[in-house]
Length: 161
Image 1 (cartoon, helix red, strand yellow):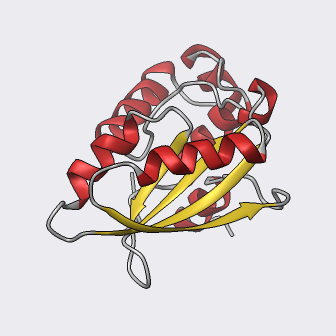
Image 2 (cartoon, helix red, strand yellow):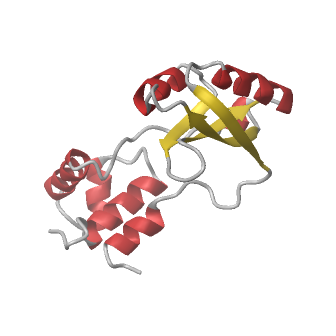
Image 3 (cartoon, helix red, strand yellow):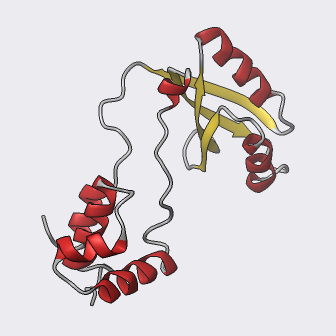
């Protein structure tokens, strides 16, 4: 079924179809891919079990919800606090969409959204109030040039590029 990358061309085509039409059913996927319904279900189950496909939820645009300001905030943490407790604190702030432990000048990189620059300052102040944050460096995004995507990577992993 799969190459050394973990997926093959059929897996990639299935993921591409689900990316394009997330509400499509298994039977319709099978029809369009020219394989049995059981094959599609088995492939999908394996992709989910292996963590290749993580969810089937809608992708929400924060700007369409009224949060057009996006910023990337690098946090320097007091090492005794640890990354997991900090991530738990950040998860309680709705405007913090992502947080990653990173190498380099900072310890965590967060993607934050806000309604205005003034509200962004309020969100950053809430982040800074979290125990263990020593310093924050903020970069405001001006425009999204390439939206979050994984399909080109899926195709590359399946050897389709």
